[in-house]
Image (cartoon, rainbow, N blue to C red; front, side):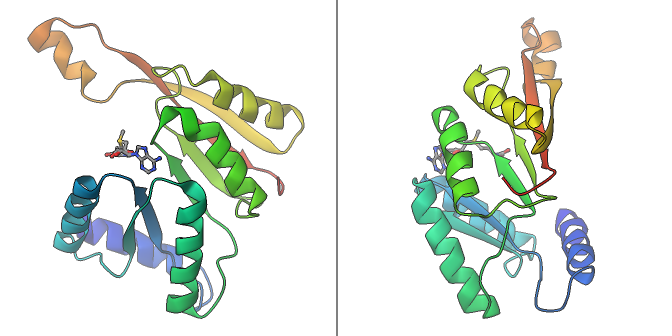
Amino acid sequence: MIGDTLRNNFSALGSNESSHHRAHLYSVEVDQMHAQRARKIVSLAGLDDWITIIESFDCEDAIERIKELEHRNTSSDLSYIDFLFIDHDKDLYTSDLQLIEREGLLKKGSIVVADNVLWAYITNYIDYVQLKAKKGVVETKTVECPVEYSENEIGELGFERLKDGIEITTYLSNP
Ligand SMILES: C[S@@+](CC[C@H](N)C(=O)[O-])C[C@H]1O[C@@H](n2cnc3c(N)ncnc32)[C@H](O)[C@@H]1O
């Protein structure tokens, strides 16, 4: 079911583009066991052709490997990232985003979503994208939401819902 939905959405994305620009999702994971589990889920969903799990702890290394894979699979160079979801080491959000910008992989129209920015107090990241917004390079907003699963804990264990937020940033021009 999830596989069908994702496959249809990927197909829809791909059909808006020229035939040589097909959507592909790369997920970077440092932990070998997490990566293996993710690959199993991707396979069960029948999405091996659409999603690749890369084992790496270093953003620069991950970018190089994604570029190589893109070149091998599509015979063209990776030009930019449409959608970037950041949800790894909270100390690396800003520096990894800056690295991806320097690589020229974020362009007008690219969307970046960063998870846990309020719960983990990732203020340097929020400050960075808000400064870019002041300069007119991006539009950005912090959307408040509870930490995942913490809602269930109110009833069962009496915990308070944990406040969190995601930062949604859209590039209005090339950074
Ligand atoms: C909060 S979990 C991600 C959860 C996932 N986005 C989801 O919604 O199910 C964070 C993951 O980032 C991985 N991670 C931590 N530091 C990393 C790094 N420098 N590079 C790649 N992955 C990293 C962890 O092993 C962990 O699996």
